[in-house]
Image (spheres, rainbow over the protein chains, first blue to last red):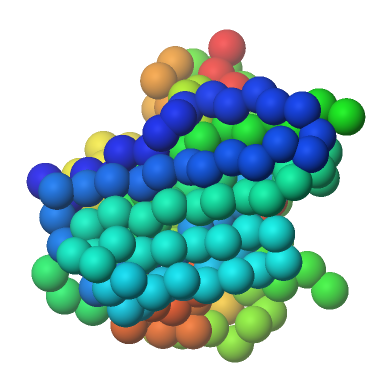
Length: 113
Length: 114
């Protein structure tokens, strides 16, 4: 069974602090996506990483795909209250092109002003 | 314009009732999905359709029946609602079913069973 484990599950920090969220698996994935979900809304895609060792930056967010394509991290520099939300990692599930995504259990981030 | 829209946003009903949730996407995508998000925020796929054809049925009880009248619409009908069906149901779409496609989600339907 393919599983994605995220850590930590909850994170409450002050504005201006840095943080890292991890997404780990024992399975190898062809790609990995990160989504952010705000209360009352659906998840919104932040980034897709496809190459082992790949690093992508989105303003203050830095995403890394592990060399072995089994894990990923999301680092936020100088967090702001607007970064508050649920962060979800997701990867293709199953053995064929079905569009199926499996999701981690999420990391709830609260950034206090 | 909303890309993926679901109705209703809230659904409160009694155990044993039958209810439907509707979803429409105006992105011209070929593939649509239904996900269930439980109280712990865990998001799990239920069904996917590609051009009106069922592609994924993830061991969901027979009480759940999806229907896709055309590739822009995917509805979910639930019979004999149970307490455990309380959750947020999300509709999503993607350009096609190849890997790495971004999925676009609606804002969810919050189903509460009394």
